[in-house]
Length: 33
Image (tube, helix red, strand yellow):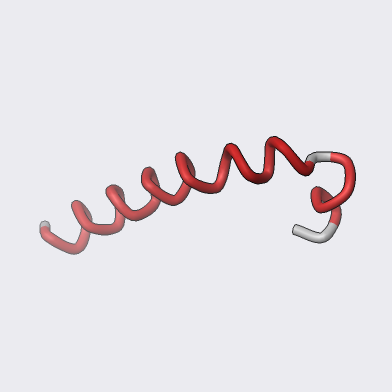
């Protein structure tokens, strides 16, 4: 996390949303099952 704070500032802001949605969706589906 800290390692991407400086050089990957934009990617960090663009990736978390998509990654979070994927993780949440996967977790929700898995939990539902």
